[in-house]
Length: 305
Figure 1: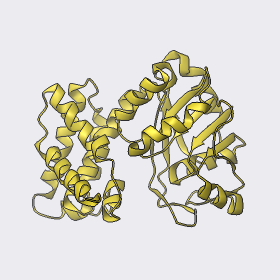
Figure 2: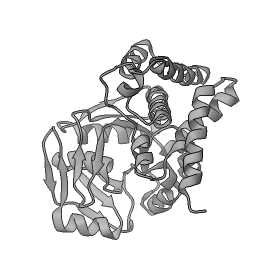
Figure 3: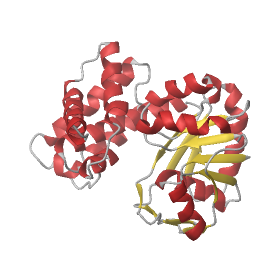
Figure 4: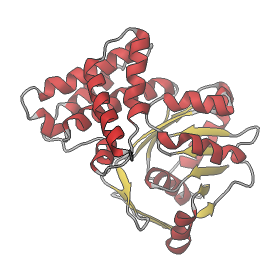
């Protein structure tokens, strides 16, 4: 199966590299600067699960169709991502987005059709240095994928075979939309809390009222998911509550790191989408709305003029 990754950044480079280690036919659609790095140094990943040092197939523009196209772009780049991968989408091609949130699914379905958009999500703390080295920051490297319609199952089966033996904690889900909603709830809580308070989970929880603030955010997001028909499962709730009340936690959202670096954020795609869904379903989200206001103000001041 020919697999195309849009970009060879931190997330795409990591999971694409793990597939390459197993002999999968992986190509990276990249920009000229990244192509030059990969041609010179290969795909370089430093990880607790073993380093990757492999030559990488790269293209600047698709010349034929791929069975699977994997998206790992930021949400604010989705329009250009759709334009870039359109030549790679043949009549039987399937796209697997690994973007945060849910808002991108409707936009991809509008571009390619509901039967062509499978489900996928990942949990991995990872970054890329200016020289192109991908750095996996701790042992977490979880990938979940699954069919959203029966027509996608053959591609899911082939991807399952490709990942067999890979140095990744991966699984196939029969309820991928439930998994996506559960991650959406946690990620929105994490991003809203750490961005609004400008600190890690532990730093927030150690302050008076910090735990109540984070659990309040979580309950707002959980209520939206429940109203949408995807209430998080009890074991997932217990896990997430344990994580957001851990006084020793140094965890922050990637969105927090974007704010700290003065970069654009996915605030509208994640927090904004959760607030809008809550409003449509009659669920009040005052804490989340405050965090969204904070990030909108940040974005307005960050942009020139």
